Structures are given as C-alpha cells and as structure tokens.
Length: 310
Image (cartoon, rainbow, N blue to C red; front, side, top):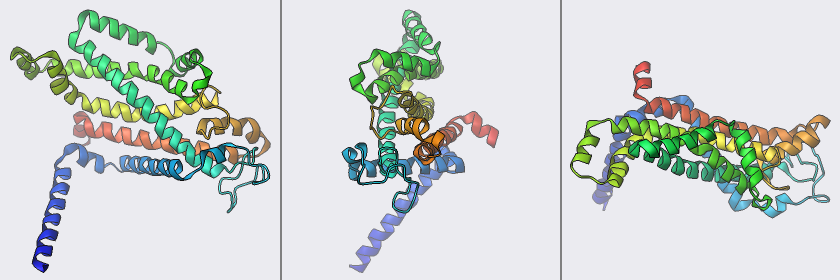
C-alpha cells in the first residue's frame, strides 16, 4: 500500500513539474508571469470576479434595492455596522457596491464578447475577400468610428425602448466597440494572408472556411486577446457612464454608475462623501486591473516588445 501511494505521489509530482516546465517554456506565459503589474491586474480581476459571484449568490437583490427607512439610519457615516455607510434611502451601501461588481462583470462580459465575435467576423471577412466586401465593411466601420464613442452610444441608447434597462446600454456599446475589433483584426488578418503557407493551403484546394478557421484566426489571437482585455475595462466604465447620465440602469439598481450619480447629485455637495466614494473606488480599481493586465498581455504577445526588453 505504501509503495503504491509513493508511486502515485511521485507521478503527481512529475506531472506538476511538467506543467511548470511547459509554463516556463512558453514565451508568452513566461513574460506575462514576470510582469508584476500584469499579475497585480490579474489579481484585481480575480478578486472582482469572486466578489461578483459572492454577491450574486448570497446578496438579496430585492432587499438592497428597496428603501430601508426604519431598518437603517439614512445617510449614516461608515462604521463597523455599515462599513460603507448608508445612502439617502437608508440602504446599506456595502452590499450594493458588492452587487455592482456582478453587474459590471456580467454586462461587461456580454458587451465585449458580442462585439469581439462581430468585429472579428467582419474584419476577417473584409481582409480575406477584399475588393467590394472590404470596402463595404470597412467604410461602414469608418462611419461608426467617426463619432466619439460615448456620444454615439448615447445616440444609440436613445433609440432603444426604455424598458430594456441596462440591456440597451449593452446593445449600444456593442455597436460602438465592433468597429474597433474589425479594424484591428483586418490588419492582423491581412498580414497573415501574405504568408506563403496560406497561399500553399489555397493552392492545395482548401475551402475558404477552412483557411479562415484553421489558419487565419489562430494567428490573430494575440491582437484579439489584447483588444478584448483592454476593451473590457472600457466597457465597464462606459456602462457606468451611461448609467451615471441616466441612460443605463433603472432607478434603485445597485449599479456603480447609478450610485455615483445619486451620490454626486444628493450627497457629495452636502458632505456625504461615502455615497459616491466607494462605488467610484471599486469602479476605478476594476478598470485599473483590466488595463494593467491588457498592457502586460500586449507586451508579452508582441515579439517587438520582448526584443526591446531583452
């Protein structure tokens, strides 16, 4: 029994060593793990994800959205009982800020995910087929890129019905972010299509979908990954901005942007700083985490950056 146990433990140690060696052998992972700021960003993101999941599972959304007069004192300063204080509706700000992380992660993921898929698809098709397809797709993207992103998002949000809540902000930002991905991926795909192995694959009779899926897209993962990570922070702050301006979360929703709006309007000028301070702090830290990780991934994935560092 002891011999079998030792053999199993030794096999586990060998497997663990193999994983570590493969990680160290990967230039990307090695460079990323050696970037302290990127690791700080990754730690912040993981912490926010844990907070978001905890809030979704254990915080009662209905209870923290309703007024709490008679249960909590209104506009109470931060204390041991109320770590982040209470707002003008006597609602405890602490669980509301925690639940705001869930909204940020959920709607930010949907926004970036959908815009990434749409932008990558359009950019790849424009680069691969060229000519008329390229002109139609990229000129359409240029029209959207000609407008300031937040101004365009506000115009698009105004078109959608009010009852959609945060979903109309998600739809608007998805349309705003899609051209960014399309332009970046088009450039990367054009570079890949100039390689000889792609010409050889086409000469051997490979169908267009096979060339795109098996050869073009895998070699465009670096810019896709970096752009998605950086845009995640932008999506979170833009969603908060739309809610701050009254075009996102409905009244009572524990959204960071809406809490900031209420705090600035009703609390900041009267000395109730905690109403807007803590939602703003969590928002800033989350965006900082994605920016740090995105910068670290860009440095690790770009060979020219690695050569410059070396």
